[in-house]
Amino acid sequence: MTEELIRVENLTMHFPLQKGLLANLFTKGKRFVRAVDGVSFSLCKGEVLGLVGESGSGKTTTGRMILRLLEPTSGEVFYRGRAVSSYAGRAMDDLREKMQVIFQDPYASLSPRMTVGDAISHPLLIHGLAKGSGARDRTLAMMEAVGLSPAEFLYKKYPHQLSGGQRQRVVIARALVTEPDFVVADEPIAMADVSVRAMILELMIRCREMFDLTYLFITHDLATCKYICDRIAIMYLGKIVEIGPLKEVFANPVHPYTATLLEAIPVPDPRYRRTHPMPKGEIPSPINPPPGCAFHPRCPLAEPSCRLNEQHLVDLGSGHKAACSLKTL
Image (cartoon, rainbow, N blue to C red):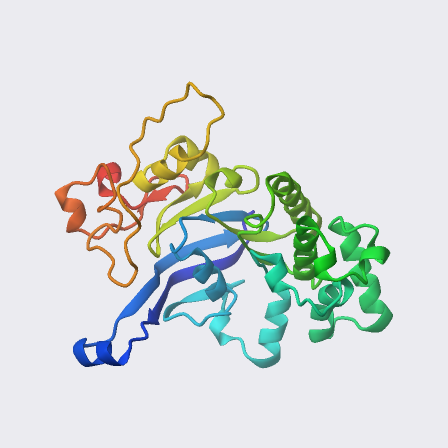
């Protein structure tokens, strides 16, 4: 895994805050939701990078900007060394064949008026990759590959006639039918029952091997990353606070927020007692983030300097980086 496929440089997304009439009269200047604030990382061909954090940390927004479903406020995404913003017209259509997404809610992302076969074959028709019997044959082959069997029987079914696990397989098949090499998997098992989650993860791992895929695996569940990710990046309030090889981060978490997430993983042992203190309060508003280290209002280890100095990722060796001066000095 040495060929760089995706590179993200200082990606930022600030959404303008919509204000009412009274707010416009009494509030000076524009206000923004700082959804993503200077995120940088890269993915090599065939790699799985887990992007982990609480709801509202900016994970999904980052994934959408990489796919150019959202235009960033600043920063750039590179695909095989070329800036994604430089693509236009037919070139952008070709790029979308190679960069696909698996959405969190399979029911919401599938049209109730389209059969399974039509939903999966639709990208083939849009991109002119196949039509007629050719599109049908490729769709049936992909359905079998993701475990939608018997494919001929399920081809004419509608989403409401399928189980939750089957609907998620349809979404995966639709994402892979154009033969992409990069997939943003946005909470792909969050809506599934516990019994189905393991099967979906196993399917994604198998598809990675079959189709030589690279995943950005977005999740709030750090425990899930153990089964599929090579590296993980921890996001908090729009920033990456720690990134590195999965085994290294799990064994030696540096940022207090990473340690908090690891400590929150359930342990099936009634005698187990947590050793790391839990954070205080709720995640601050991205409209008015705290100065200095954004985690300091909740951090049990915070010192006065944490309120004053903005933290930046420091290289700890072996690709492990963290943004905490208390642990990296």
